[in-house]
Length: 156
Image (cartoon, rainbow, N blue to C red; front, top):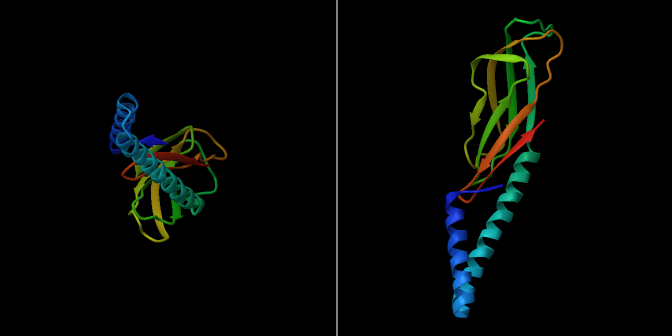
């Protein structure tokens, strides 16, 4: 979990208020500083709850254009990703292609619409395997962010 600029500024102000309350022995500064700390903590709990809901709703189906995989042969990969959006949380989905492959063309990143209900996104791209045999896909990476926090989760 990373703090965004807005949250860093609020935490700095809270730290200044709390240290001023300690130095000046002022209950008003203590109240203001502790209120900001509680507000940031509350926003963290709401963000964490929403991220867990979104991550638990993800469904990913991946299909290849061929069953037989040969080195140097182009493959079309189609990935259908379904997830439930939450208001005020922006999600960026990134497909993680398998190791020992070259990415030819197509988009591997999907920018979702915040707050949309359960929606299906389609990701198509072409790869060239550098080895024979089965390809092991790493999974997808989800980047969540709102006004206060950002986080990246890797689902495999």
